[in-house]
Structure formats: structure tokens, C-alpha cells
Image 1 (cartoon, rainbow, N blue to C red):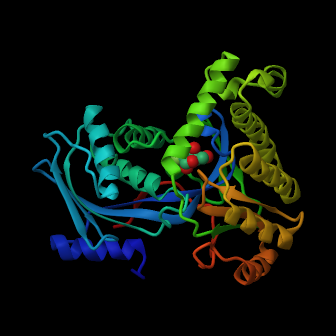
Image 2: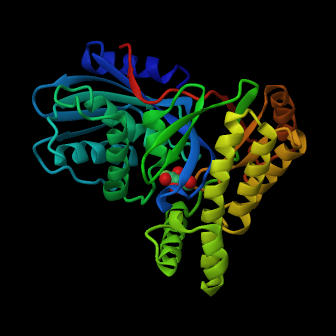
Length: 387
Ligand code: GAF
């Protein structure tokens, strides 16, 4: 488990199939700098792809069989035919992420081919860094190398991956994670308009380090709580008579928000104010203004804690420890769907050591674990790599 996913997939492929793979693709995980739970409200987000990824080593086969080996799960195998119904399994979930994308591509009438694949990755799982989206996007990217897929763009792969996750896997996620993985740009965050699908790369300032801190708080009840938030946002949008909360201005929120159930108003307030913060953050980031970025990240965290109610005490504590170290010199907030997972900090490089020291000294998860800290680079999106 210590070698890179590239080395692992190639070695397992060689051992299983007696040949080197002819295609290798990768798709990164992502960290969201700001813009949480705005994607499924047709809103704005500012994530970046990270240099942790899912890799698939593969070769075509002519008999219509898809055979998948999961190198991270004791080389477990899943096998099925393209010309027979592809059903969802009770487990393992990794197999469903692959099956969902394959089935979606078949249903869209694309010229599919059988495939031998070995999958491995180093995106921390269950941490809110989109390991599942990176797997789905990698599968799409792999089949997109086939003849007949020339018209399929990375954004299409992202939307196929999202659809598979919504309809096949059963998680009603938005499109941020898949778009980040498919369209990431090295050294840049992406300002994504989740309605128009316009994507604008925003450079990460040269003096800024992206630090991800895994709280090791298990993300309990994630799906039900996520779906409940989604329903509350839809209820609020109906109240305002708009297609999505994206269409609600701060003025409209102030004028007609008080008619809402107080909890639903809180949810709507988070989304409306978060969209405004994303725009401000994109401007601050482009100007290299880490102090302003820090203010917006602090407001975002408070909004997730108090209005959207998706943080947990250990995450708030971790954010507080980092904040004590960085003061106003950068930003820190919870990142991802919530209820545990990771915290992201965008800080001057010079502060990384002090953050590591303070977190190591002061933070313990409820189960006694220390936080794991990843200092990341903003990475390029999914694509083929030399086999
Ligand atoms: C999860 C979802 F998959 C995303 O679509 C997004 O809604 C995020 O939570 C919250 O911003 O990662």
C-alpha cells in the first residue's frame, strides 16, 4: 500500500493479465476553498483539484466483458457484460461507482468496448475530498479514449459521473466534485458556475499553501442529512417562487425570508450569502489578498456552523486551533459536505510548520486520533498518463 497508485495499478495489471496496460488514466480528488452546498442550488463554488488521485490501468477487450480489479481492496474483482443489464450491487460500493458510469455511457448509446481495468487511488476515503467522484470521473475518462468518443468533452464526463452517482449509486450530490476532477487546472482554483457550467481558473497566489487537515471524525448520517438539507433548500426556493436559491438576492431574502420556517430560512440564508462570498473570494484570490480570503472563509465557516448546521464540535475546534496560529494572515474553514471530514486552510507557506505543531499538540478526534495534515498543490484535471 505504500507505492504510488500508478505503480500499484501497473504491477497488479501485469500480474493479473500477464501484460502491461495499454491505457492509464488518472482523475484527482478536490478540496473546496469556499462555496459549500451551493452547487445543487445552481450556485457558485471555488474548489481546486488536488494532487491525490484515482488511477486506472487498462486495456480494451473484444468480447464485451468489463473486468475490474480493485487494488486497494485486496484485488477484489467485479465482472459483467456490456450487452446484459448492469445492476446495482448491495456491496462493494467501489464497484457501483464503476458500474454506474459504464451503464450511463451504454445508455447514452456511446460505442463502448469491453475493458480490463485495475483501479487504485490515494485520495483519502470518507474524508470529504471526493474520492468517489475521482473514481467515477476516471472511469469516464478511460472510456472517452475509445474511438467514437471524440465529441465527448471533459465537462460531459463530469456530468455523466454526476448522473451515475445520482441515479445509480443513490447520492443526490451536485456537480462540483465531478467538474473539479474533470477540469482542474494546475496552480489554480476553479470558479464554477454550477448552472451555466462556465468554469474560470483563478490562480492560487504563489505565497499560499493549501493545507488540508483530516479531522478523523467519521462522517455519520451523511447521506440522510445531506438530502434533508437539499429538500430544505428546495422548499425555500419554492417559497420565493424561483427555480433555485441561486435566484434569490440578499434583498429578497431580507424581505420575504421571515415568512419561512426559521430553520428553512437559516438554510436559505447560508446559500444566498455563500454565493456572494464565493464571488468575493474569487476576486480576493486573483488579487493575492489572503487576508480578505481569510475573512470570507471565516464567515463561510460560521454560516455552515450556525445557519446550515453541518459542522461538528471537533471540526469547529480544529478550525479554532488553526485560526489561533494564522490570525488574519490567511483562511480556514470546514470543506466538503460536512458532519466531519476535513478542514482546509489557505495560508502563507511560512505558517505551515506552526499549524502542524499546534494541531499536533492540541487536537484529538473524539476517538483519540490526531489530525492528518496534507499540504497539497492545485492539480490538473483528469486525463491519460503515460502507460
Ligand atoms: C458533497 C457533494 F457531493 C457536492 O456536490 C457538494 O454539494 C458538497 O458536498 C457540499 O458543497 O461533496
